[in-house]
Length: 159
Image (cartoon, rainbow, N blue to C red; front, side, top):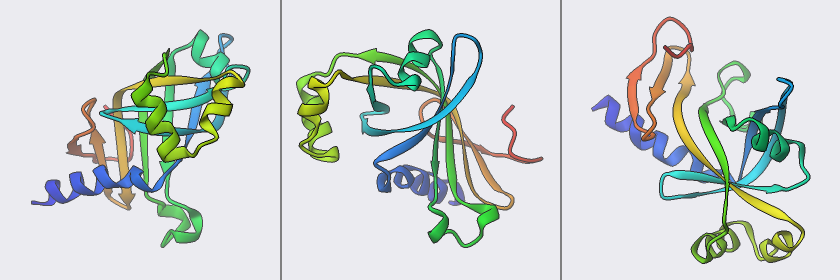
């Protein structure tokens, strides 16, 4: 029963977010942290990026990314135990199909058409694995289907 509750919590966790903290790596191996607006469509996260942005250039040269959804500090019970979901993923630029464009406009606002004209692109992520951390001793490994795989023990390291 506990796993079902954790899965429900995981499924609902990203619904309050319109942007995600993004970690990318340059072709020289330099890490870069940023953020970008996103939508979730089916099981993929689609990131809206300026084609001139550093994080986009990094995605083109190195498709490995990390996504971080983290509880707002002002809403956290403790600064040490903010709820968070971290995904390791691959990323690739995709065409902005009519259904995706409609969903972008609905969820992120009518400015989407203007941004697309300004050379913003859509990047699709494919989840490899994740970690869902909700407090001390309450960390879960998440599989590529975004399902709770197991409770993690011995710290927050994935195996």
